Length: 322
Image 1 (cartoon, helix red, strand yellow):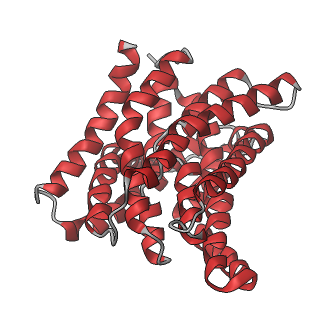
Image 2 (cartoon, rainbow, N blue to C red):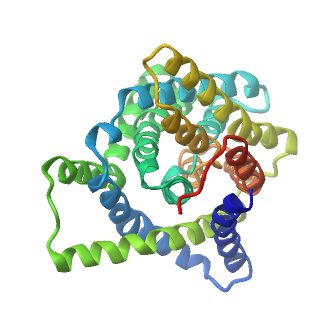
């Protein structure tokens, strides 16, 4: 447990630092979008490119890994909508609640955390989850949310818009370029490689700090006050039900000879146990959903994940890389 805490504690401590810096005014609110932009368009793409470049292509797009993860994500979306849809939580809000229940913070937090915890071999399965959530889970939930506004035709347009949004995200392109470099054994020229490495090295601390700042900002811009009963159960679905379902499906698929290896299943389960993706609060605000509820789900899952994620990693026998 001590070895696992030595990895997880600094990660969550940096998130707390970002939150407190924004809360106390040390980091101006106007600076948060710029910080987020640096991570999203510069640092994180460079980190993912380097991981992709050093990972075999079949590990980046492993059918068994993708299949298990996607089935679990779709089941979590359906389950969360089924248990939260009510007179108080309409379809749009239920859909965004389902998105935060099924979409872990793999980009900003998961890739560096799981690589630090389990070694470079964890990069491939985690990158699979990033692609699945960007292209499938997000598109589906946004389409369901828009269906609440104007019927199935609007849902189809929303799904296409969400897909175009995913294609405009630099992260999939960075992964794709890394995969091409891996397949062709391409290596960057020395000075270019140094620049990419410097940006990649900045990704983890700045991304974690930014998560905290974004969480504070989301709380400040929340339009509603949300009762605990409307956000805590969804946070628990994210932290408990989602990883349990991934583990069960992966173990069953492995027993049938079509699923992930034990190591890949460990990575997938821990990826699912991460807190909710912090950028979903921005999507909820953009599409007119109850961003107060979404922000509180994300904040609750991030606060509780330090204990739940660390405990799960210990229970599953994770061995931090030397």
